[in-house]
Image (cartoon, rainbow over all chains, first blue to last red; front, side, top):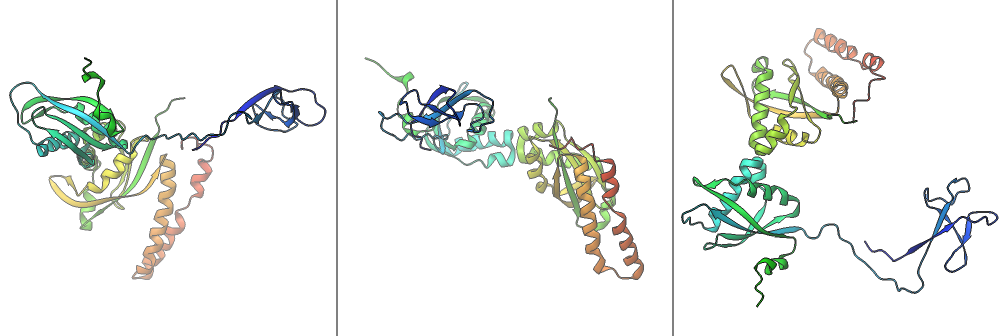
Length: 178
Length: 162
């Protein structure tokens, strides 16, 4: 959605003869005025505050694009934390663990949530997941309520959530300033 | 003004063999639907739909069923209905199918729809009549189901619908 920069001048209605026209307090020209409250140029409007839209002659028009949804996907960097012992997992087990937690919380339809494990490191048990933005809340809540794996209690720590993959390359918490 | 708004799902239960229709019970339907929601939508779905879920009306002869649930979660209930394969009653499992025919905001709108739907079904049965008596009885049934009586009494009480 592109918007041109316009500014509004508020002119209090001056008794200017017939019609709802007033003089612009900026340029001085006679312009039709619109009511602030009911946006009408009607004669029967009882409100007394009027304005007209005028373009600033000095600034050049520029385009400003505003997006409501930043991106289709959201990326989560998480790490799996076990209470003790050395548990070995590979990427398939990890994904199965998340799907089982989704199935417990959201049923069969929730277990079919499409998400991807982009990266999984077996040493640190940390992973990068990708999920559609509309399904982020469901996945995050299922990760929160993850109980355990094969009888061992475990938890998920969510390190970073971002709609842009580039943001995962740097993390200000792990920054070393020397 | 805060009020709990609900959605009423008008459904039709169809069985594999027509004789088992008489064994329809409200409790069997209630537990079957609740288990289906828990399976299809998990703990979240079971909790959402369990708050205000009720079987409001069940007609064993025609297999018409009216379910009620909250307005925010009626889609969960609606999407879990196709997953019901059989109903348990008195220790017997009967394969069945539940299909929804109407969603309404109040029982009255569902009732109005049901009357129109029944009339259409009766008219559909007319060509398949074998004898004159059947034809006459179907004619009488079609003429007797009318909306006029409902509209007389229900003209001023339609503020329930959302």
